[in-house]
Length: 457
Length: 101
Image 1: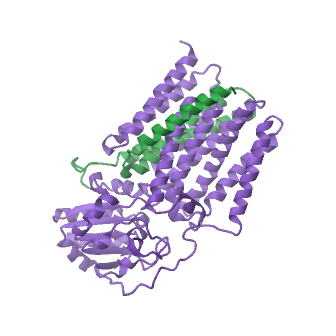
Image 2: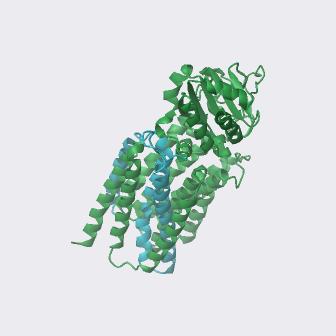
Image 3: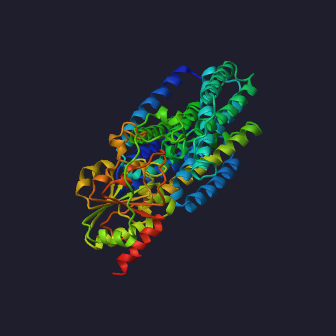
């Protein structure tokens, strides 16, 4: 058979496998198989591409081996708590790959026509922004740089000017690609700078949105590269990823009751916002022993984890406590807010790692109607996502954000290091409610002492 | 480039985006992290373009750029699929007797 025909027929099979793989992600029971199908699709696409006539293999092989070693090592070694950083870096490597493909094709066909030049321009632009944006996101997540939004005067003007230059450069380059190599290099550099500038004003707590968006960009970058080499499989696969990232971005924004524009440009959390009115009352501390007495008689317990759980690495002890409570006859559930943690689904992965069965993980919308029947809600390292002010206090910056209504449970135990505010910089009135008790200290140690209370009896 | 080819590629793009929305909106929130890393691995499909650039003898610069692209796309693909598999392997149902520790 003609090799081009064979290659392209194989690409169709790959596309089908990608689609089936994503379809099987709709249930945890089939998801793993789906991921494998998708990987098989990728392998087929690679093998088919290697059949292209006239290829020299030495550099391909070198690149593949080197990339595989790095990929395997990072996938094996990364801790589940560091998954957001890992995904950020993966987004970035997808982006830079597209940039390099666009750049290489420029050298191969310097005299390309205007349409091809536009596709190269887009591939380099999206790829570059994705790369440096992801690196900054990674640095923020791993606290290599401050997670605080970095804002300066005239930021919007600088960014707009940069975009304008980018646009003009694009037009100049596309009109005459061969003669404008310096302009092209300028575009590459600007794309890289732009990626940094658009992510630095975004705060650490908004990272779920940023990662989702960069995920989408990495897909779009693949799409753009697909236009450059006129290859359908890149476009299909890239747009599936682009759509996926966009949906996640929308879910995250909705869960924070903010528009995408607000997340990207407002520098949320950079100023300490004054909460509506002074919060009355006093927080009531509780000891581990008293907490134990409450838990011992509880029929139903809901854990509400937040990023603090990941920081304290408390997922394993939480699962242990959960199992002890279950043995004691209580019904256990883990209620997870869509933006808990630093990326979509972060908490679910951590709890799954600790062997919490996935049928105990419940979403906000399914637990809220049941909240009044819950005996004890234990809040671990979450703050803004359980702040009742979001429901009623119009002056609060988080007003309107959907929350997990832990305050409606009969008793709320909040595990917290201190009375510090959450990311939104708002004091949480939940801590002052009559049915709330504060168990101060490191979350892991606090849970540990609850576990030993249970074991000693 | 023939503008008709561009239109045809665009056609594929639009259809796939709609397909993507349909597929992804059915993924439960529990699996959003593996979804991201898995989708990410799929975006490593750029490796196809990278292989062609790295394997075509067209001078040093494109070969170097192509090889770099192969490296990063491979990291993206291999790292993405493996880490997704590792994560998904941890999601267990309650009925299955989990190894007691």
